[in-house]
Length: 592
Image (cartoon, rainbow, N blue to C red; front, side, top):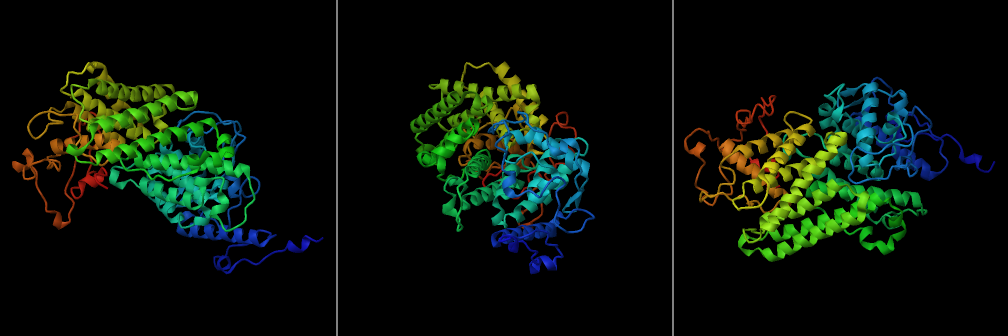
Protein backbone atom coordinates (compact mmCIF):
# COMPACT_ATOMS: atom_id res chain seq x y z
CA UNK A 1 0.00 0.00 0.00
CA UNK A 2 2.90 2.31 0.63
CA UNK A 3 3.77 2.41 -3.05
CA UNK A 4 0.24 2.79 -4.40
CA UNK A 5 0.08 6.47 -3.51
CA UNK A 6 2.67 7.14 -6.24
CA UNK A 7 0.55 5.46 -8.92
CA UNK A 8 -1.81 8.10 -10.19
CA UNK A 9 -2.67 9.87 -13.39
CA UNK A 10 -0.82 13.12 -13.95
CA UNK A 11 -2.08 15.92 -16.16
CA UNK A 12 -0.07 16.43 -19.31
CA UNK A 13 2.23 19.43 -19.56
CA UNK A 14 1.00 22.67 -21.12
CA UNK A 15 2.81 22.05 -24.40
CA UNK A 16 1.32 18.57 -24.75
CA UNK A 17 -2.18 19.86 -23.98
CA UNK A 18 -1.80 22.60 -26.59
CA UNK A 19 -0.79 19.99 -29.15
CA UNK A 20 -3.69 17.78 -27.97
CA UNK A 21 -1.33 14.95 -27.15
CA UNK A 22 -2.84 12.57 -24.65
CA UNK A 23 -0.68 11.63 -21.65
CA UNK A 24 -0.98 7.85 -21.68
CA UNK A 25 1.60 6.84 -19.13
CA UNK A 26 1.49 6.20 -15.40
CA UNK A 27 4.15 8.22 -13.62
CA UNK A 28 5.99 6.70 -10.71
CA UNK A 29 8.81 9.15 -10.12
CA UNK A 30 9.70 12.70 -11.03
CA UNK A 31 12.64 11.47 -13.13
CA UNK A 32 10.35 9.20 -15.14
CA UNK A 33 7.90 12.04 -15.64
CA UNK A 34 10.67 14.28 -16.98
CA UNK A 35 11.83 11.53 -19.31
CA UNK A 36 8.31 11.04 -20.68
CA UNK A 37 7.93 14.79 -21.18
CA UNK A 38 11.20 14.93 -23.12
CA UNK A 39 10.15 12.01 -25.31
CA UNK A 40 6.73 13.51 -26.02
CA UNK A 41 8.24 16.89 -26.83
CA UNK A 42 10.69 15.31 -29.28
CA UNK A 43 7.87 13.28 -30.83
CA UNK A 44 5.64 16.34 -31.25
CA UNK A 45 8.38 18.47 -32.80
CA UNK A 46 9.44 15.67 -35.13
CA UNK A 47 5.86 15.29 -36.33
CA UNK A 48 5.56 19.04 -36.70
CA UNK A 49 8.61 18.91 -38.96
CA UNK A 50 7.24 16.24 -41.36
CA UNK A 51 6.80 12.89 -39.79
CA UNK A 52 3.13 12.47 -38.83
CA UNK A 53 1.61 9.17 -39.94
CA UNK A 54 -0.80 9.70 -42.84
CA UNK A 55 -4.51 9.94 -41.96
CA UNK A 56 -4.00 9.29 -38.27
CA UNK A 57 -4.47 11.23 -35.10
CA UNK A 58 -1.34 12.79 -33.61
CA UNK A 59 -1.34 10.63 -30.51
CA UNK A 60 1.88 8.84 -29.64
CA UNK A 61 2.58 5.81 -31.82
CA UNK A 62 1.59 2.55 -30.11
CA UNK A 63 3.83 -0.38 -31.04
CA UNK A 64 2.17 -3.31 -32.74
CA UNK A 65 3.96 -5.82 -30.55
CA UNK A 66 4.45 -5.49 -26.84
CA UNK A 67 5.20 -2.29 -25.02
CA UNK A 68 6.78 0.81 -26.42
CA UNK A 69 10.53 0.25 -26.52
CA UNK A 70 12.89 2.51 -24.64
CA UNK A 71 16.18 3.79 -26.06
CA UNK A 72 18.15 1.26 -24.05
CA UNK A 73 16.16 -1.53 -25.72
CA UNK A 74 17.71 -0.66 -29.05
CA UNK A 75 21.25 -1.32 -27.93
CA UNK A 76 22.63 -3.92 -30.31
CA UNK A 77 21.61 -7.26 -28.82
CA UNK A 78 24.59 -8.80 -27.09
CA UNK A 79 23.03 -12.27 -27.36
CA UNK A 80 22.91 -12.28 -31.14
CA UNK A 81 25.83 -14.44 -32.29
CA UNK A 82 26.88 -12.19 -35.16
CA UNK A 83 30.03 -10.41 -34.08
CA UNK A 84 30.25 -6.80 -35.18
CA UNK A 85 32.55 -6.40 -38.13
CA UNK A 86 34.20 -3.33 -39.52
CA UNK A 87 33.75 -2.93 -42.38
CA UNK A 88 32.53 -6.38 -43.55
CA UNK A 89 29.58 -5.94 -45.91
CA UNK A 90 26.57 -8.13 -46.52
CA UNK A 91 27.67 -11.18 -44.54
CA UNK A 92 26.41 -13.03 -41.51
CA UNK A 93 23.05 -14.42 -40.45
CA UNK A 94 20.74 -13.38 -37.67
CA UNK A 95 20.05 -15.93 -34.98
CA UNK A 96 16.46 -14.83 -34.40
CA UNK A 97 13.54 -14.06 -36.73
CA UNK A 98 12.47 -10.46 -37.13
CA UNK A 99 8.87 -9.27 -36.76
CA UNK A 100 8.67 -7.83 -40.27
CA UNK A 101 9.75 -11.18 -41.73
CA UNK A 102 6.43 -12.51 -40.43
CA UNK A 103 4.53 -9.69 -42.14
CA UNK A 104 3.33 -7.90 -39.02
CA UNK A 105 1.38 -4.81 -40.04
CA UNK A 106 3.02 -1.41 -39.97
CA UNK A 107 1.64 2.05 -40.63
CA UNK A 108 1.85 4.19 -43.70
CA UNK A 109 4.34 6.98 -43.04
CA UNK A 110 4.97 10.39 -44.52
CA UNK A 111 8.07 12.57 -44.48
CA UNK A 112 8.35 15.90 -46.26
CA UNK A 113 5.34 15.13 -48.41
CA UNK A 114 6.71 11.71 -49.40
CA UNK A 115 4.30 8.91 -48.47
CA UNK A 116 5.54 5.34 -48.22
CA UNK A 117 3.10 2.42 -48.16
CA UNK A 118 3.29 -0.13 -45.32
CA UNK A 119 4.40 -3.00 -47.56
CA UNK A 120 7.23 -0.94 -49.03
CA UNK A 121 8.34 0.10 -45.55
CA UNK A 122 8.45 -3.53 -44.45
CA UNK A 123 10.35 -4.53 -47.59
CA UNK A 124 12.95 -1.78 -47.18
CA UNK A 125 13.47 -2.68 -43.52
CA UNK A 126 13.99 -6.30 -44.50
CA UNK A 127 16.56 -5.31 -47.12
CA UNK A 128 18.38 -3.09 -44.64
CA UNK A 129 18.79 -5.79 -42.02
CA UNK A 130 19.71 -8.41 -44.61
CA UNK A 131 22.34 -6.54 -46.61
CA UNK A 132 23.50 -3.51 -44.61
CA UNK A 133 23.04 -4.09 -40.91
CA UNK A 134 25.62 -6.94 -40.58
CA UNK A 135 28.45 -4.53 -41.38
CA UNK A 136 27.34 -1.83 -38.90
CA UNK A 137 25.28 -3.63 -36.21
CA UNK A 138 24.50 -0.67 -33.99
CA UNK A 139 20.71 -1.25 -33.93
CA UNK A 140 18.92 -4.28 -32.51
CA UNK A 141 17.15 -6.01 -35.43
CA UNK A 142 14.46 -7.59 -33.24
CA UNK A 143 11.72 -4.97 -33.64
CA UNK A 144 9.08 -4.07 -36.19
CA UNK A 145 9.06 -0.82 -38.24
CA UNK A 146 6.51 0.94 -36.03
CA UNK A 147 8.66 0.31 -32.98
CA UNK A 148 11.67 1.85 -34.72
CA UNK A 149 9.55 4.90 -35.49
CA UNK A 150 8.44 5.09 -31.86
CA UNK A 151 12.08 4.88 -30.80
CA UNK A 152 13.32 7.54 -33.22
CA UNK A 153 11.83 8.95 -36.46
CA UNK A 154 15.37 9.59 -37.69
CA UNK A 155 16.51 5.99 -37.19
CA UNK A 156 13.31 4.75 -38.83
CA UNK A 157 13.69 6.88 -41.96
CA UNK A 158 17.40 6.13 -42.27
CA UNK A 159 16.63 2.40 -42.17
CA UNK A 160 13.97 2.80 -44.86
CA UNK A 161 16.18 5.01 -47.03
CA UNK A 162 19.22 2.73 -46.91
CA UNK A 163 17.07 -0.35 -47.46
CA UNK A 164 15.56 1.28 -50.56
CA UNK A 165 18.94 1.59 -52.31
CA UNK A 166 18.37 -1.68 -54.18
CA UNK A 167 14.58 -1.90 -53.84
CA UNK A 168 13.43 -2.90 -57.31
CA UNK A 169 9.69 -2.63 -56.62
CA UNK A 170 9.98 1.16 -56.26
CA UNK A 171 13.37 2.61 -57.28
CA UNK A 172 12.08 6.16 -56.72
CA UNK A 173 11.97 5.93 -52.92
CA UNK A 174 15.67 6.63 -52.43
CA UNK A 175 15.69 9.80 -54.51
CA UNK A 176 12.41 11.07 -53.02
CA UNK A 177 13.64 10.59 -49.45
CA UNK A 178 17.04 12.18 -50.00
CA UNK A 179 16.22 15.79 -49.17
CA UNK A 180 13.63 15.12 -46.39
CA UNK A 181 15.87 12.66 -44.54
CA UNK A 182 18.90 14.97 -44.68
CA UNK A 183 16.74 17.85 -43.41
CA UNK A 184 15.37 15.67 -40.62
CA UNK A 185 18.89 14.59 -39.64
CA UNK A 186 20.09 18.19 -39.40
CA UNK A 187 16.99 19.21 -37.45
CA UNK A 188 17.28 16.32 -34.99
CA UNK A 189 20.81 17.36 -33.98
CA UNK A 190 19.13 20.00 -31.81
CA UNK A 191 17.76 17.27 -29.51
CA UNK A 192 21.02 16.61 -27.70
CA UNK A 193 19.27 14.76 -24.88
CA UNK A 194 18.36 12.03 -27.39
CA UNK A 195 21.92 11.65 -28.60
CA UNK A 196 22.09 7.85 -28.99
CA UNK A 197 19.50 7.52 -31.81
CA UNK A 198 20.84 10.68 -33.44
CA UNK A 199 24.37 9.28 -33.53
CA UNK A 200 23.06 5.97 -34.85
CA UNK A 201 21.18 7.68 -37.67
CA UNK A 202 24.04 10.00 -38.63
CA UNK A 203 26.62 7.21 -38.64
CA UNK A 204 24.49 5.08 -40.96
CA UNK A 205 23.90 8.03 -43.29
CA UNK A 206 27.64 8.69 -43.49
CA UNK A 207 28.41 5.07 -44.30
CA UNK A 208 25.75 4.82 -47.02
CA UNK A 209 25.15 8.39 -48.19
CA UNK A 210 22.48 9.29 -50.71
CA UNK A 211 23.71 9.22 -54.31
CA UNK A 212 24.86 12.62 -55.51
CA UNK A 213 25.96 14.02 -58.83
CA UNK A 214 28.68 16.29 -57.45
CA UNK A 215 31.09 15.99 -54.56
CA UNK A 216 30.20 19.57 -53.71
CA UNK A 217 26.70 18.37 -52.74
CA UNK A 218 28.03 15.77 -50.31
CA UNK A 219 26.61 16.39 -46.83
CA UNK A 220 28.51 13.49 -45.28
CA UNK A 221 31.38 15.57 -43.79
CA UNK A 222 28.84 17.82 -42.06
CA UNK A 223 26.88 14.87 -40.66
CA UNK A 224 30.10 13.14 -39.62
CA UNK A 225 31.27 16.20 -37.73
CA UNK A 226 27.93 16.48 -35.93
CA UNK A 227 27.99 12.80 -34.95
CA UNK A 228 31.56 12.99 -33.65
CA UNK A 229 30.97 16.12 -31.59
CA UNK A 230 27.72 14.75 -30.18
CA UNK A 231 29.47 11.52 -29.20
CA UNK A 232 32.36 13.36 -27.54
CA UNK A 233 30.03 15.79 -25.77
CA UNK A 234 28.30 12.82 -24.12
CA UNK A 235 31.46 10.92 -23.29
CA UNK A 236 31.22 8.03 -25.74
CA UNK A 237 34.95 8.30 -26.42
CA UNK A 238 35.61 7.56 -22.73
CA UNK A 239 32.96 4.86 -22.59
CA UNK A 240 33.66 3.60 -19.06
CA UNK A 241 33.92 7.14 -17.65
CA UNK A 242 30.39 8.24 -18.50
CA UNK A 243 29.89 9.81 -15.07
CA UNK A 244 32.39 12.55 -15.96
CA UNK A 245 30.06 13.81 -18.69
CA UNK A 246 26.74 14.03 -16.88
CA UNK A 247 25.30 15.90 -13.93
CA UNK A 248 23.23 12.92 -12.74
CA UNK A 249 24.46 10.10 -10.58
CA UNK A 250 24.73 6.94 -12.69
CA UNK A 251 24.73 3.31 -11.73
CA UNK A 252 27.46 1.16 -13.33
CA UNK A 253 26.01 -0.92 -16.15
CA UNK A 254 28.46 -3.17 -17.94
CA UNK A 255 26.12 -3.94 -20.84
CA UNK A 256 25.55 -0.26 -21.49
CA UNK A 257 29.27 0.49 -21.25
CA UNK A 258 29.99 -2.25 -23.77
CA UNK A 259 27.36 -0.87 -26.14
CA UNK A 260 28.76 2.64 -25.83
CA UNK A 261 32.23 1.30 -26.60
CA UNK A 262 30.97 -0.44 -29.74
CA UNK A 263 28.95 2.58 -30.84
CA UNK A 264 31.95 4.87 -30.36
CA UNK A 265 34.15 2.51 -32.38
CA UNK A 266 31.75 2.54 -35.32
CA UNK A 267 31.19 6.28 -35.00
CA UNK A 268 34.90 7.00 -34.93
CA UNK A 269 35.72 4.65 -37.79
CA UNK A 270 32.95 5.81 -40.13
CA UNK A 271 33.13 9.53 -39.38
CA UNK A 272 36.92 9.70 -39.68
CA UNK A 273 36.78 7.58 -42.84
CA UNK A 274 34.30 10.05 -44.31
CA UNK A 275 37.02 12.69 -44.09
CA UNK A 276 40.05 10.53 -44.96
CA UNK A 277 38.46 8.95 -48.01
CA UNK A 278 37.30 12.35 -49.25
CA UNK A 279 40.75 13.87 -49.09
CA UNK A 280 40.12 15.83 -45.90
CA UNK A 281 42.13 15.59 -42.67
CA UNK A 282 40.35 13.40 -40.11
CA UNK A 283 39.17 14.75 -36.78
CA UNK A 284 41.43 13.14 -34.18
CA UNK A 285 40.73 13.02 -30.46
CA UNK A 286 42.23 10.98 -27.61
CA UNK A 287 39.88 8.23 -26.52
CA UNK A 288 39.73 5.20 -24.27
CA UNK A 289 41.73 3.12 -26.73
CA UNK A 290 44.67 5.45 -26.09
CA UNK A 291 44.42 4.63 -22.38
CA UNK A 292 43.78 0.90 -22.48
CA UNK A 293 44.97 0.34 -18.92
CA UNK A 294 42.13 2.56 -17.62
CA UNK A 295 39.44 0.85 -19.71
CA UNK A 296 40.88 -2.65 -19.96
CA UNK A 297 37.77 -4.42 -18.67
CA UNK A 298 35.55 -3.02 -21.41
CA UNK A 299 38.12 -3.22 -24.19
CA UNK A 300 38.75 -6.90 -23.46
CA UNK A 301 34.99 -7.51 -23.71
CA UNK A 302 34.73 -6.08 -27.23
CA UNK A 303 34.29 -8.52 -30.10
CA UNK A 304 37.65 -9.21 -31.80
CA UNK A 305 36.39 -7.70 -35.08
CA UNK A 306 35.68 -4.39 -33.38
CA UNK A 307 38.98 -4.28 -31.52
CA UNK A 308 41.20 -5.11 -34.49
CA UNK A 309 39.29 -2.83 -36.82
CA UNK A 310 39.88 0.16 -34.59
CA UNK A 311 43.57 -0.79 -34.36
CA UNK A 312 43.87 -0.85 -38.15
CA UNK A 313 41.89 2.36 -38.53
CA UNK A 314 44.07 4.12 -35.97
CA UNK A 315 47.20 3.18 -37.93
CA UNK A 316 45.64 4.46 -41.15
CA UNK A 317 44.50 7.81 -39.73
CA UNK A 318 47.87 8.41 -38.07
CA UNK A 319 49.58 7.65 -41.37
CA UNK A 320 47.37 10.01 -43.38
CA UNK A 321 47.74 12.87 -40.90
CA UNK A 322 51.53 12.46 -40.76
CA UNK A 323 52.02 12.16 -44.51
CA UNK A 324 49.61 15.00 -45.29
CA UNK A 325 51.72 17.23 -43.05
CA UNK A 326 54.72 16.34 -45.20
CA UNK A 327 53.05 17.02 -48.54
CA UNK A 328 51.92 20.52 -47.64
CA UNK A 329 55.52 21.68 -47.99
CA UNK A 330 56.67 23.08 -51.32
CA UNK A 331 58.01 20.48 -53.74
CA UNK A 332 61.55 21.85 -53.46
CA UNK A 333 61.40 21.80 -49.65
CA UNK A 334 59.98 18.30 -49.24
CA UNK A 335 62.21 15.82 -47.44
CA UNK A 336 61.71 12.83 -49.72
CA UNK A 337 63.86 10.46 -47.67
CA UNK A 338 61.79 11.20 -44.57
CA UNK A 339 58.53 10.69 -46.47
CA UNK A 340 59.65 7.34 -47.84
CA UNK A 341 60.64 6.26 -44.34
CA UNK A 342 57.17 7.19 -43.05
CA UNK A 343 55.51 5.32 -45.92
CA UNK A 344 57.45 2.16 -45.18
CA UNK A 345 56.85 2.47 -41.44
CA UNK A 346 53.07 2.86 -41.65
CA UNK A 347 52.72 0.27 -44.40
CA UNK A 348 54.57 -2.25 -42.25
CA UNK A 349 52.38 -1.37 -39.26
CA UNK A 350 49.19 -1.92 -41.27
CA UNK A 351 50.45 -5.25 -42.62
CA UNK A 352 51.42 -6.35 -39.12
CA UNK A 353 47.96 -5.49 -37.78
CA UNK A 354 46.34 -7.42 -40.62
CA UNK A 355 48.53 -10.46 -39.95
CA UNK A 356 47.79 -10.42 -36.22
CA UNK A 357 44.05 -9.94 -36.71
CA UNK A 358 43.89 -12.90 -39.13
CA UNK A 359 40.24 -13.72 -39.91
CA UNK A 360 38.89 -10.78 -37.92
CA UNK A 361 39.74 -8.28 -40.65
CA UNK A 362 38.73 -8.43 -44.30
CA UNK A 363 41.71 -8.71 -46.64
CA UNK A 364 40.25 -6.14 -49.02
CA UNK A 365 40.14 -3.49 -46.31
CA UNK A 366 43.74 -4.16 -45.28
CA UNK A 367 44.68 -3.70 -48.94
CA UNK A 368 42.73 -0.43 -49.09
CA UNK A 369 44.54 0.88 -46.01
CA UNK A 370 47.88 0.01 -47.60
CA UNK A 371 46.88 1.75 -50.85
CA UNK A 372 46.02 5.00 -49.04
CA UNK A 373 49.53 4.99 -47.59
CA UNK A 374 51.46 3.81 -50.65
CA UNK A 375 49.98 6.41 -53.03
CA UNK A 376 52.07 9.03 -51.24
CA UNK A 377 54.91 7.63 -53.37
CA UNK A 378 53.68 10.02 -56.06
CA UNK A 379 54.84 12.89 -53.84
CA UNK A 380 58.31 11.48 -53.17
CA UNK A 381 59.86 11.94 -56.63
CA UNK A 382 60.30 8.27 -57.38
CA UNK A 383 62.55 7.82 -60.43
CA UNK A 384 64.47 5.14 -62.29
CA UNK A 385 66.76 4.76 -59.27
CA UNK A 386 63.94 3.44 -57.07
CA UNK A 387 61.62 1.45 -59.37
CA UNK A 388 60.91 -1.09 -56.65
CA UNK A 389 58.72 1.44 -54.84
CA UNK A 390 56.47 1.85 -57.88
CA UNK A 391 56.36 -1.90 -58.38
CA UNK A 392 55.16 -2.29 -54.80
CA UNK A 393 52.53 0.41 -55.34
CA UNK A 394 51.37 -1.39 -58.48
CA UNK A 395 51.01 -4.62 -56.51
CA UNK A 396 48.93 -2.95 -53.78
CA UNK A 397 46.62 -1.19 -56.27
CA UNK A 398 46.06 -4.44 -58.15
CA UNK A 399 45.27 -6.30 -54.92
CA UNK A 400 42.54 -3.79 -54.03
CA UNK A 401 40.74 -4.38 -57.33
CA UNK A 402 41.30 -8.14 -57.25
CA UNK A 403 40.03 -8.61 -53.68
CA UNK A 404 36.95 -6.42 -54.17
CA UNK A 405 36.21 -8.18 -57.46
CA UNK A 406 36.51 -11.59 -55.80
CA UNK A 407 34.16 -10.53 -53.01
CA UNK A 408 31.70 -9.21 -55.57
CA UNK A 409 31.70 -12.48 -57.50
CA UNK A 410 30.90 -14.37 -54.30
CA UNK A 411 27.92 -12.34 -53.09
CA UNK A 412 27.44 -9.15 -55.15
CA UNK A 413 29.54 -7.28 -52.63
CA UNK A 414 29.69 -3.91 -54.40
CA UNK A 415 25.89 -3.63 -54.65
CA UNK A 416 25.66 -3.07 -50.90
CA UNK A 417 29.10 -1.60 -50.23
CA UNK A 418 29.74 1.71 -48.51
CA UNK A 419 31.25 4.90 -49.86
CA UNK A 420 34.68 3.57 -48.84
CA UNK A 421 34.59 1.12 -51.74
CA UNK A 422 33.69 3.81 -54.28
CA UNK A 423 36.51 6.09 -53.13
CA UNK A 424 39.02 3.25 -53.05
CA UNK A 425 38.14 1.92 -56.49
CA UNK A 426 38.50 5.43 -57.91
CA UNK A 427 41.89 5.81 -56.25
CA UNK A 428 43.04 2.37 -57.41
CA UNK A 429 41.97 3.19 -60.98
CA UNK A 430 43.82 6.52 -60.95
CA UNK A 431 46.93 4.79 -59.59
CA UNK A 432 46.89 2.11 -62.29
CA UNK A 433 46.37 4.78 -64.96
CA UNK A 434 49.42 6.71 -63.77
CA UNK A 435 51.59 3.61 -63.64
CA UNK A 436 50.47 2.54 -67.12
CA UNK A 437 51.46 5.94 -68.55
CA UNK A 438 54.75 6.11 -66.67
CA UNK A 439 57.69 6.71 -69.02
CA UNK A 440 60.03 4.74 -66.79
CA UNK A 441 60.81 1.26 -68.01
CA UNK A 442 59.02 -0.54 -65.18
CA UNK A 443 58.91 -4.36 -65.19
CA UNK A 444 55.11 -4.55 -64.89
CA UNK A 445 52.64 -6.46 -67.04
CA UNK A 446 50.64 -3.77 -68.87
CA UNK A 447 48.22 -6.30 -70.36
CA UNK A 448 47.03 -7.58 -66.99
CA UNK A 449 47.06 -4.01 -65.67
CA UNK A 450 44.63 -2.97 -68.40
CA UNK A 451 42.34 -5.88 -67.58
CA UNK A 452 42.23 -4.87 -63.91
CA UNK A 453 41.73 -1.21 -64.84
CA UNK A 454 38.55 -1.97 -66.75
CA UNK A 455 37.44 -4.40 -64.07
CA UNK A 456 37.66 -1.42 -61.73
CA UNK A 457 35.44 0.57 -64.11
CA UNK A 458 32.96 -2.31 -64.23
CA UNK A 459 32.71 -2.44 -60.46
CA UNK A 460 32.12 1.32 -60.28
CA UNK A 461 29.31 1.12 -62.83
CA UNK A 462 27.78 -1.87 -61.05
CA UNK A 463 27.80 0.00 -57.76
CA UNK A 464 26.13 3.02 -59.35
CA UNK A 465 22.58 3.72 -58.15
CA UNK A 466 21.75 6.39 -60.73
CA UNK A 467 22.91 7.04 -64.27
CA UNK A 468 24.52 10.33 -63.28
CA UNK A 469 25.88 9.65 -59.80
CA UNK A 470 29.54 9.81 -58.83
CA UNK A 471 30.20 6.12 -59.45
CA UNK A 472 28.87 6.21 -63.02
CA UNK A 473 30.56 9.49 -63.88
CA UNK A 474 33.85 8.45 -62.34
CA UNK A 475 33.86 5.24 -64.40
CA UNK A 476 33.18 7.12 -67.64
CA UNK A 477 35.74 9.81 -66.83
CA UNK A 478 38.54 7.35 -66.10
CA UNK A 479 37.66 5.36 -69.22
CA UNK A 480 38.07 8.45 -71.37
CA UNK A 481 41.39 9.26 -69.71
CA UNK A 482 42.66 5.77 -70.57
CA UNK A 483 42.05 6.54 -74.26
CA UNK A 484 43.54 10.02 -74.05
CA UNK A 485 46.93 10.76 -75.57
CA UNK A 486 47.31 14.07 -73.74
CA UNK A 487 46.71 13.09 -70.14
CA UNK A 488 49.59 13.97 -67.78
CA UNK A 489 51.20 16.22 -70.40
CA UNK A 490 53.27 18.93 -68.72
CA UNK A 491 53.96 22.49 -69.83
CA UNK A 492 57.19 21.50 -71.58
CA UNK A 493 55.41 18.84 -73.63
CA UNK A 494 56.69 15.84 -71.70
CA UNK A 495 54.51 13.19 -70.08
CA UNK A 496 54.94 12.88 -66.32
CA UNK A 497 52.27 10.72 -64.74
CA UNK A 498 54.19 10.42 -61.46
CA UNK A 499 53.80 14.09 -60.55
CA UNK A 500 50.75 15.12 -58.53
CA UNK A 501 50.00 18.83 -58.73
CA UNK A 502 47.40 18.88 -55.94
CA UNK A 503 49.20 18.74 -52.63
CA UNK A 504 46.57 19.32 -49.95
CA UNK A 505 44.03 16.55 -50.42
CA UNK A 506 46.10 13.69 -49.11
CA UNK A 507 45.72 10.35 -50.93
CA UNK A 508 42.74 11.58 -52.95
CA UNK A 509 44.91 14.23 -54.60
CA UNK A 510 46.06 11.43 -56.90
CA UNK A 511 42.46 10.98 -58.03
CA UNK A 512 41.37 14.63 -58.12
CA UNK A 513 44.44 15.56 -60.16
CA UNK A 514 43.29 13.12 -62.84
CA UNK A 515 39.90 14.86 -62.88
CA UNK A 516 41.61 18.15 -63.63
CA UNK A 517 43.43 16.64 -66.60
CA UNK A 518 40.04 15.46 -67.88
CA UNK A 519 38.47 18.89 -67.48
CA UNK A 520 41.31 20.62 -69.32
CA UNK A 521 41.28 18.18 -72.23
CA UNK A 522 37.61 17.36 -72.65
CA UNK A 523 35.99 20.57 -71.44
CA UNK A 524 38.55 23.08 -72.66
CA UNK A 525 38.86 24.75 -69.26
CA UNK A 526 41.98 26.64 -68.28
CA UNK A 527 44.50 24.75 -66.22
CA UNK A 528 44.69 26.27 -62.71
CA UNK A 529 47.98 24.46 -62.11
CA UNK A 530 49.66 25.79 -65.23
CA UNK A 531 52.90 27.68 -64.60
CA UNK A 532 51.92 30.07 -67.40
CA UNK A 533 48.74 31.61 -66.04
CA UNK A 534 48.20 33.70 -69.16
CA UNK A 535 48.06 30.71 -71.48
CA UNK A 536 44.61 29.50 -72.47
CA UNK A 537 43.72 26.03 -73.71
CA UNK A 538 43.42 25.45 -77.43
CA UNK A 539 39.64 25.45 -77.46
CA UNK A 540 39.40 28.75 -75.65
CA UNK A 541 42.09 30.34 -77.82
CA UNK A 542 40.20 29.33 -80.96
CA UNK A 543 36.96 30.73 -79.64
CA UNK A 544 35.19 27.37 -79.50
CA UNK A 545 34.53 27.78 -75.81
CA UNK A 546 32.46 30.78 -74.83
CA UNK A 547 33.41 32.57 -71.65
CA UNK A 548 30.84 34.13 -69.38
CA UNK A 549 32.05 36.59 -66.74
CA UNK A 550 31.66 35.22 -63.25
CA UNK A 551 30.47 38.61 -62.11
CA UNK A 552 27.22 38.07 -64.00
CA UNK A 553 26.39 35.29 -61.58
CA UNK A 554 24.77 33.08 -64.25
CA UNK A 555 25.61 29.40 -64.44
CA UNK A 556 27.31 28.32 -67.65
CA UNK A 557 26.04 25.38 -69.63
CA UNK A 558 28.28 22.56 -68.50
CA UNK A 559 26.63 19.78 -70.47
CA UNK A 560 29.02 16.84 -70.49
CA UNK A 561 26.91 14.68 -72.78
CA UNK A 562 28.80 15.82 -75.85
CA UNK A 563 32.07 14.47 -74.51
CA UNK A 564 31.12 11.43 -72.47
CA UNK A 565 31.18 8.14 -74.32
CA UNK A 566 27.55 7.29 -75.07
CA UNK A 567 28.43 3.61 -75.38
CA UNK A 568 29.49 3.59 -71.77
CA UNK A 569 26.52 5.41 -70.31
CA UNK A 570 23.71 5.74 -72.88
CA UNK A 571 21.31 7.62 -70.53
CA UNK A 572 23.87 10.41 -70.07
CA UNK A 573 21.77 12.92 -71.99
CA UNK A 574 21.38 15.50 -69.27
CA UNK A 575 24.49 16.34 -67.36
CA UNK A 576 23.97 20.07 -66.73
CA UNK A 577 25.23 21.22 -63.41
CA UNK A 578 27.72 18.48 -62.62
CA UNK A 579 30.54 20.97 -62.52
CA UNK A 580 29.25 24.55 -62.55
CA UNK A 581 31.82 26.99 -63.94
CA UNK A 582 31.81 29.04 -60.78
CA UNK A 583 34.09 27.47 -58.18
CA UNK A 584 34.44 24.31 -60.23
CA UNK A 585 37.10 23.00 -57.91
CA UNK A 586 34.59 22.93 -55.07
CA UNK A 587 32.63 20.30 -56.97
CA UNK A 588 35.33 17.75 -56.35
CA UNK A 589 36.17 19.37 -53.04
CA UNK A 590 39.31 21.04 -54.40
CA UNK A 591 39.83 23.08 -52.29
CA UNK A 592 37.07 22.92 -49.64
